Image (cartoon, rainbow, N blue to C red; front, side, top):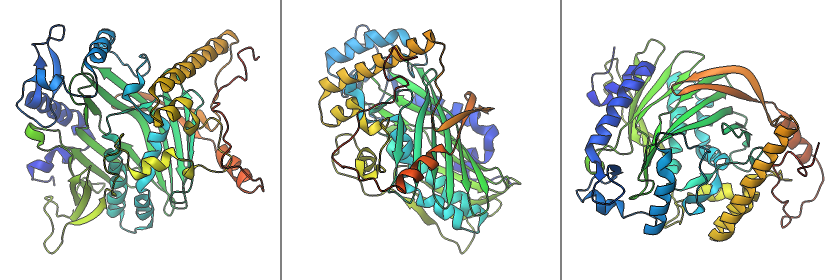
Amino acid sequence: MAPTDPKQAAASAGGGGFFASLASSLSNFGSAMSKSVNGLVGYEGLEVINPEGGTEDAEEEAKKGRWKQEERDSYWKMMQKYVGSDITSMVTLPVIIFEPMTMLQKMAELMEYSYLLDMADKTEDPYMRLVYASSFFISVYYAYQRTWKPFNPILGETYEMANHGDITFIAEQVSHHPPMSAGHAENEHFTYDVTSKLKTKFLGNSVDVYPVGRTRVTLKKDGVVLDLVPPPTKVSNLIFGRTWIDSPGEMILTNLTTGDKVVLYFQPCGWFGAGRYEVDGYVYNSADEPKILMTGKWNEAMSYQVCDLEGEPLPGTELKEVWRVADTPKKDKFQYTHFAHKINSFDTAPKKLLASDSRLRPDRMALEKGDLSTSGYEKSSLEERQRAEKRNREAKSHKFTPRWFDLTDEVTPTPWGDLEVYQYNGKYTQHRAAIDSSECIEDPNSRPDFNPWQYDNLDAE
């Protein structure tokens, strides 16, 4: 039977309720707080959304944010022609809006609370397995609320991580047009595999981000396979006002082995911030009967409680916390967590780091030091080299072949379009085992130059 609590009703709809609940939430989201800038010449009708739901005029909110007025005006003149377009890789963006991290590193941030997948593998309770695993996927949204943009990876760029939770993690940029990344993580309890292809729609002062991708987790003890469908994300006030991020909609995590699933509804931000960050839903068995209710905030903590077939808490049970955000640095320039700093450091780098690793990007390193001028120059240089490589590759009828992932024949449907699936080929495991078993001594102060390139020089055959 379906839960009767109206707050939870959207979560009970399962996959079929996704679009209806999303459309409803976005409708409420827009009507609650959006205002048009009508008093600023040249920006009439531009939507500004106040995350705090204040009553001040949209023109005042529009003047807030990280942009100086002349930068804001110039950038808007450049961007307005892209309204309605997918801008994932078509626009060259200034480094002032970037954080010193790439999308590949951002993928690795999900591993911060990997112990939750360890617990999902260890438990004998099939429903608690989904409580732990879904909490793992919710945990990364705290990091996703940062409003700085990560660098787009260069084709062939990689990111490897070690020294965290006994995990081996490798990610690679496997395609440039469209931009696609693949990742693989593994320890004694689970394997994690993802193919990611973000799709965007630029709306003027906001952008909708659709997570076209496939995410699978295999729990090793029982061979259980979990499949994730995350909610879309909306980034508001890109140019005018204070930039902020919300992800209203449903997250669905399905146990493909048993048919059990968890459906969690991310509440949209309402008047005066009401509902923002809140997540509610249920773990269901294969007969769509609720077994465990889940509630919390994606920027704080998640809790669970056993429930009856009506979705009501069982008498004699109590709400128990399953996950809580770790302490974070105070007044950090980029709102980084301690784990984000670890991801950027060489402390989490394995021995003999690949020269294609994101940590080595000169634009990223310059931005980390606060040198925006050098960062912008290096970013432009990398992008031009990438374009030159593409021209050379096409002239010679060459194809780019990823090193650590293989393109399969599988095309999987997602709510936002079909996706070609890349599969981890196991070669990185062999590569890493050979290096770890060697007796080579590495100078910690000597790092290779960033080199994701297919050709040693552009005259290569």
